[in-house]
Image (cartoon, rainbow over all chains, first blue to last red; front, side):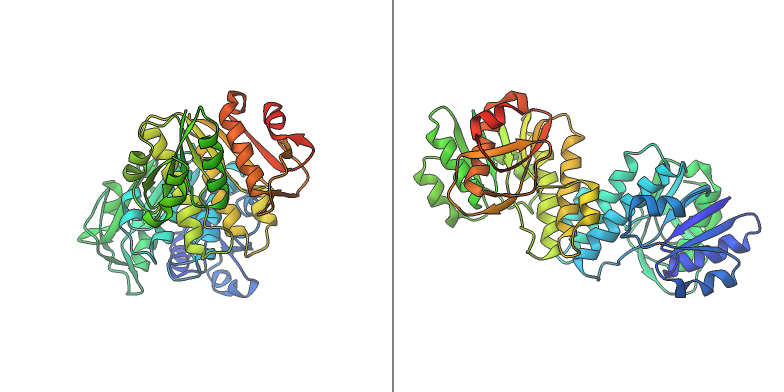
Length: 216
Length: 216
């Protein structure tokens, strides 16, 4: 399977490309914003493609040409300017969804935020609500398509070393999770067709990632 | 007909409530953010309801209880903070749409921006693109419902006195239009069921508003 990783240069993306390349049976294409970000991925033997998420659906569709799955793990993060929140977390995600359809690719894995429900927008602190809203509308857009989607809702992200064990379910108690483990969950999600059409939350837990994803 | 005007305290809203109240056969309910904004509307004999667009769908649905149509003419404007762009222009609009459905009201008139197509987002200057994106997603959300909607796309808004003559069509050349004339177009849209399921652009032109809207 060849997988386009959108937002490859983020911490989750870097871990994910490494997992894919080291798997032996899958290959990654890293979508990056700048040519100077390519070296890390080339060292892993991965393809790279330089496309900004603020470019057109057509440009992104070209990046998705010939892959079997698209993973969206780009993010402005909750602390960038609010203009980037709408242009990257919402519009960038929607354009990637539309580009995936245009490229004729069916499988799509979305890395969302922990809780993107309507209730979560209302309950969020004022500074965080726009980010939750952006992720909410991106998730809603994806769910209205006929793509083979999975939406992953990670808890608070840390840069700790991966623990390899998680808790995964439609609803879990709020907690943290290393970015490396989120990458592990994405990788297992790509391997498990049973996750298609589903969304689930993940935090650090007691179940090996492979088993936790299989149980979804 | 009783009409809930969301964003009544804006210039378009104020003109619209006046038109409705002076029509003799319609009544307006002005949705305002603060009680101290009520006097203008009470002087016109209109009902008022104090609801913030950042409150819940249920709260907004209560404001729509018993009306025959909802007009969304609220806006953070393109020059407010980008957090308000997503929370008012997108999420506030979507919540109003959902509240309208919840209240069992079918007719919905959305005041959008001049061009909210995908192409317009891509072409917009960086500072304006988030606003266009917010309006795009709000319009898309509305179109995906089974409400009896009309989406009005006015040109550049001015505070000039209304001229009473406009050009209205699916696509017109970019131009300006007084807010008072936008209110006139909304009022005639409410009177014309032929506008249901349609969207159109408006700028100042040569055709009396009533005739221009009838020709849509």
